[in-house]
Amino acid sequence: MKNLKKFHQRRVIKYLNQVLPILLSCGFDKQTLVIRVQPKDLLFILSFFKNHSSLQYKVLTAISGVDFPCRKKRFEVVYDLLSVRFNSLRIKTFVDEITPLISSFLFSAVQRGGNVKFGIFLEFSLKKTMK
Figure 1 (cartoon, rainbow, N blue to C red):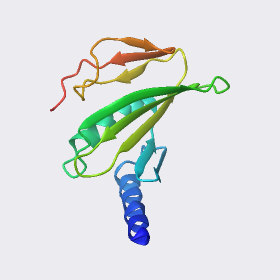
Figure 2: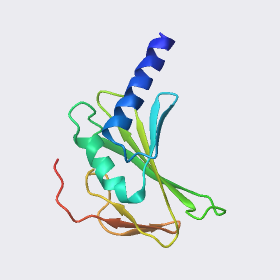
Figure 3: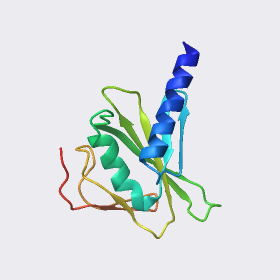
Figure 4: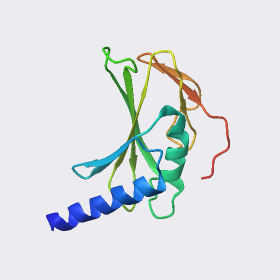
């Protein structure tokens, strides 16, 4: 059974790297799919995973951040998503204390309005999104 799970995980990683060449990295941490993206690609990636008919990552469970003061892009911002069909997904991106991170209203759990949390500036997209 463990070999079947590893086989499935390798197939998912291969598929995502083919379909989304903009991913910086893609892998699994236990049963959670973890991907890293550039901040400029975040909205597209969130939309892709939410609206893809086979993936269905419809629930945003958390947006969190980690401060690495020694790095140039010191903030790691993490979006945790859940799928009805699959396990959880973690999308990571990195920003500095000056550059705003574009966020979105793709998920109803995201608060409307600008936020500053721990020095991370979030700008919310005003584009209409599909539900």
